[in-house]
Image (cartoon, rainbow, N blue to C red):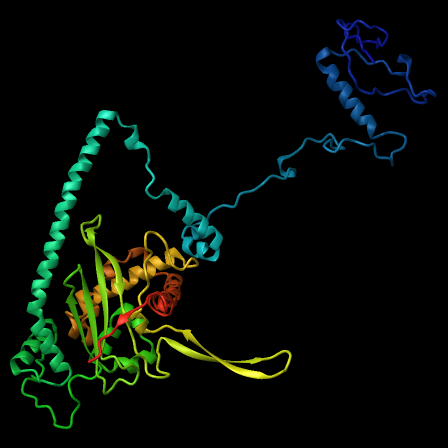
Length: 477
């Protein structure tokens, strides 16, 4: 239907000129009682509109049609409308519209424990680890973007660094030779110490006074303690210092995690721990001597373990650990501390007969230290199912314990026995963020991490070492 805008006093539906008319596709209000059989309406069926301006005409038609919809004859019927067309002409409000929301981050969420979140989601942790691993060693593109003549200078600096690396290697070799030289000077002192521990000799009065003087310098008490220099040992008293090395080893944090209650019985027979440098190759050897008369677990008198260095120094100029070799322990019958016997009954489904099956199961033990993990050769691992990250942690921990025995425990055994060495632990190297005195939850998290650390240490040099390498034969004396 067409309406002539040139004369708004009456409707002009018959005028076809599109250039002079404006078509409004709206249903106008018909006169009451007007209806045709075909459903079509004629122009005379509509009420004439009063004179309106063209500016208000469209709005008037829309509002008039909207008002009449609600006053139709069949008020109970609801006219079908499109889904997004409201039944009322009320303006839409923002509150009526559903929209996505984003949770806000409060102050309580600022200290989110990312480690706990990754631990609870292994898949996410693996994905993050893989992503970070792919970024290690990747160039940022800065060096490649430099001009060619500048990059040439960078390559020249690398050549200078090669010469520096050669000097570092010579420096480390000379340090190793110097350590060997002073090891010979330490040897008489270690032999003297072993004789006192085993009760073969008694310390002199001068040695006792020198030891007391060290304690006096570090003791803040004003009262001077009575000297023990002139005390005589009773004839029926214990020989030497009982359980000296067991106590010293247990006062080392990493080793204390490896020593089980079953191990303590065997380690009570440990009378000396020594270190010597290898002759034909860079490295060192550890020797654990036991009293055969008190050892009910194995026949070896000396257990050995050797650590080998690589020929080339590392990036920092230090010697690089290559591998370690332990020795075979000759366990007495049913005395193997690295395994336990599990007994299981099996029933035959056909005959209904039962049988008892025994099998040896590896367990955590300090003596797994003499069967170290085997590093990959040429990038290949013998056990295809082995976790490379876990193997790397085990190798690193095993080497660190060997270095601590060489550089700390053996030279300062009496300080580990008395507990004085614990005052000089490298706790300053720990991140301050690991400690929070004001937050009890953080303390609880640290307590929860302790058993996990214990399990890691036990697994690193404990039960998982069993069967990893064919050890050498230990000394029989």
